[in-house]
Image 1 (cartoon, rainbow, N blue to C red):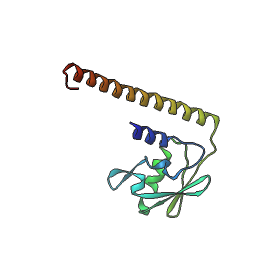
Image 2: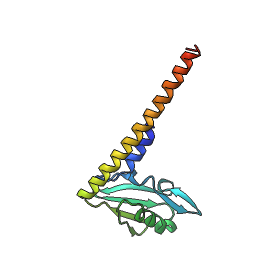
Image 3: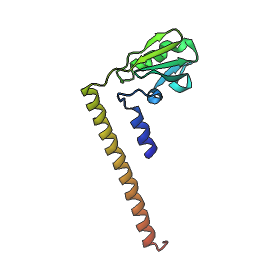
Image 4: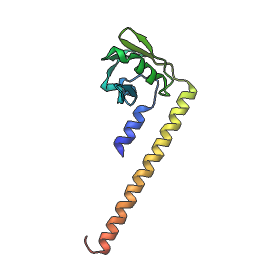
Length: 133
Protein backbone atom coordinates (compact mmCIF):
# COMPACT_ATOMS: atom_id res chain seq x y z
CA UNK A 1 0.00 0.00 0.00
CA UNK A 2 2.80 2.38 0.94
CA UNK A 3 4.78 1.63 -2.23
CA UNK A 4 1.69 2.14 -4.40
CA UNK A 5 1.04 5.48 -2.68
CA UNK A 6 4.61 6.62 -3.29
CA UNK A 7 4.45 5.53 -6.94
CA UNK A 8 1.22 7.47 -7.49
CA UNK A 9 2.62 10.59 -5.80
CA UNK A 10 5.70 10.40 -8.02
CA UNK A 11 3.43 10.73 -11.06
CA UNK A 12 2.16 14.13 -9.96
CA UNK A 13 3.85 17.02 -11.73
CA UNK A 14 5.32 19.62 -9.46
CA UNK A 15 7.25 22.77 -10.33
CA UNK A 16 10.60 21.01 -10.04
CA UNK A 17 11.45 18.59 -12.85
CA UNK A 18 12.49 15.10 -11.89
CA UNK A 19 13.91 12.57 -14.36
CA UNK A 20 11.64 9.93 -12.82
CA UNK A 21 8.45 11.91 -13.44
CA UNK A 22 8.02 10.20 -16.83
CA UNK A 23 8.91 6.64 -15.73
CA UNK A 24 5.27 5.57 -15.63
CA UNK A 25 4.61 6.50 -19.27
CA UNK A 26 3.83 3.64 -21.64
CA UNK A 27 5.20 3.82 -25.19
CA UNK A 28 4.16 1.68 -28.15
CA UNK A 29 7.42 0.09 -29.29
CA UNK A 30 8.16 -3.08 -31.22
CA UNK A 31 4.48 -4.02 -31.30
CA UNK A 32 3.91 -3.83 -27.55
CA UNK A 33 3.49 -1.28 -24.78
CA UNK A 34 6.68 -0.70 -22.77
CA UNK A 35 7.70 1.80 -20.09
CA UNK A 36 9.83 4.78 -21.00
CA UNK A 37 12.90 3.70 -18.95
CA UNK A 38 13.13 0.48 -20.97
CA UNK A 39 13.64 2.36 -24.25
CA UNK A 40 15.34 5.58 -23.15
CA UNK A 41 17.00 7.49 -20.35
CA UNK A 42 15.66 10.74 -18.91
CA UNK A 43 18.14 13.26 -17.52
CA UNK A 44 17.89 16.78 -16.20
CA UNK A 45 19.55 19.09 -18.72
CA UNK A 46 18.75 22.39 -17.00
CA UNK A 47 16.55 23.21 -14.00
CA UNK A 48 13.55 23.53 -16.33
CA UNK A 49 14.43 21.04 -19.09
CA UNK A 50 14.36 17.25 -19.22
CA UNK A 51 16.23 15.43 -21.98
CA UNK A 52 15.30 11.91 -23.01
CA UNK A 53 17.95 9.94 -24.87
CA UNK A 54 16.11 7.23 -26.77
CA UNK A 55 18.19 4.10 -27.43
CA UNK A 56 16.53 3.45 -30.81
CA UNK A 57 16.09 6.63 -32.91
CA UNK A 58 13.15 5.06 -34.77
CA UNK A 59 11.11 5.40 -31.55
CA UNK A 60 11.54 9.17 -31.19
CA UNK A 61 8.08 9.98 -32.56
CA UNK A 62 6.41 7.30 -30.41
CA UNK A 63 8.07 8.68 -27.25
CA UNK A 64 7.17 12.27 -28.19
CA UNK A 65 3.57 11.24 -28.79
CA UNK A 66 3.39 9.36 -25.46
CA UNK A 67 4.64 12.43 -23.59
CA UNK A 68 2.20 14.76 -25.36
CA UNK A 69 -0.80 12.54 -24.58
CA UNK A 70 0.27 11.84 -20.99
CA UNK A 71 -1.94 14.54 -19.49
CA UNK A 72 1.06 16.22 -17.83
CA UNK A 73 0.70 19.35 -19.98
CA UNK A 74 4.16 18.91 -21.53
CA UNK A 75 5.23 19.82 -25.06
CA UNK A 76 8.30 17.76 -26.09
CA UNK A 77 10.52 18.67 -29.04
CA UNK A 78 12.67 16.22 -31.01
CA UNK A 79 16.29 17.39 -31.20
CA UNK A 80 18.32 15.00 -33.33
CA UNK A 81 18.54 11.74 -31.39
CA UNK A 82 17.08 13.13 -28.15
CA UNK A 83 13.83 14.65 -26.98
CA UNK A 84 13.83 17.90 -25.01
CA UNK A 85 10.92 18.39 -22.64
CA UNK A 86 10.61 21.93 -21.28
CA UNK A 87 8.85 22.00 -17.92
CA UNK A 88 6.47 24.96 -17.82
CA UNK A 89 6.10 27.09 -14.73
CA UNK A 90 3.51 25.73 -12.34
CA UNK A 91 0.32 27.77 -12.50
CA UNK A 92 -2.24 28.19 -9.75
CA UNK A 93 -4.61 25.85 -11.58
CA UNK A 94 -1.91 23.19 -11.94
CA UNK A 95 -1.02 23.43 -8.24
CA UNK A 96 -4.67 23.16 -7.25
CA UNK A 97 -5.20 20.15 -9.52
CA UNK A 98 -2.08 18.46 -8.10
CA UNK A 99 -3.21 19.17 -4.54
CA UNK A 100 -6.67 17.77 -5.30
CA UNK A 101 -5.16 14.63 -6.83
CA UNK A 102 -2.86 14.23 -3.80
CA UNK A 103 -5.83 14.53 -1.41
CA UNK A 104 -7.72 11.90 -3.43
CA UNK A 105 -4.69 9.58 -3.30
CA UNK A 106 -4.41 10.13 0.47
CA UNK A 107 -8.07 9.22 1.00
CA UNK A 108 -7.80 6.16 -1.22
CA UNK A 109 -4.69 4.97 0.62
CA UNK A 110 -6.23 5.72 4.03
CA UNK A 111 -9.33 3.67 3.13
CA UNK A 112 -7.13 0.83 1.91
CA UNK A 113 -5.11 0.80 5.15
CA UNK A 114 -8.29 0.94 7.23
CA UNK A 115 -9.71 -1.99 5.25
CA UNK A 116 -6.58 -4.07 5.84
CA UNK A 117 -6.63 -3.12 9.53
CA UNK A 118 -10.32 -4.06 9.83
CA UNK A 119 -9.68 -7.45 8.19
CA UNK A 120 -6.75 -8.19 10.50
CA UNK A 121 -8.71 -7.26 13.62
CA UNK A 122 -11.54 -9.52 12.44
CA UNK A 123 -9.08 -12.38 11.86
CA UNK A 124 -7.55 -11.95 15.34
CA UNK A 125 -11.00 -11.89 16.97
CA UNK A 126 -11.98 -15.03 15.07
CA UNK A 127 -8.79 -16.71 16.26
CA UNK A 128 -9.57 -15.69 19.85
CA UNK A 129 -13.04 -17.20 19.58
CA UNK A 130 -11.55 -20.45 18.28
CA UNK A 131 -8.97 -20.22 21.09
CA UNK A 132 -6.09 -20.41 18.64
CA UNK A 133 -4.50 -17.33 20.20
